[in-house]
Image 1 (cartoon, each protein chain N blue to C red):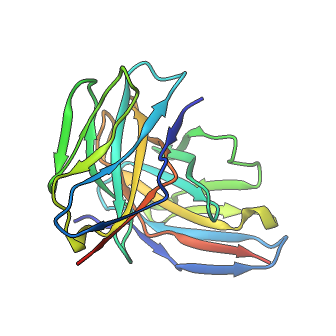
Image 2 (image 1 turned 180 degrees about the vertical axis):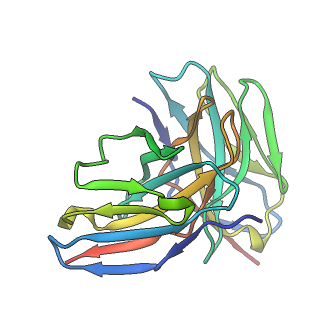
Length: 115
Length: 114
């Protein structure tokens, strides 16, 4: 089967500091998985932050970056300098190009940024 | 941006009764989905729906579950009869097409079966 692992349930970071949220994946059924980061801001629905569909490529959005590493089966989310407005829950997800919307999600990492 | 609306945000139902969860997807989208998240667990795919038919369903999509989108209106998830283990947050989502297009999610409906 497919699985996505996020090891940190919660991360607390001071404003302007750097951030890394870990994500590793495993799949036995998808030859070329697509990888995603979704975010849920307080009171909002889940929304796509960034996606990468090709191994070795990097995706970026709103100052966040993630590189699709097939060797280490990882897709860590990074930001050089976080802001209070980045406080949210971040979900790593895995999907298949031809089966849109059938995503396997990680358990989520709650990011709390304090001033 | 485009919004998927789910009404109501919270629903309480007696075990054994029927419940229908409503979703108003983005207007020009063609693919529709339901996900289930039990408290403290990961969000898991239930089903996807296209052109009036279920395309894929997971093992979580029990025989008591059904989905439909009559006349292009609300996309609904019906559970009949409900069981205690159906208590969860149910997320509706929609997308315009295939090939890596973005999926838009609603805020979820928390279903409590008592």
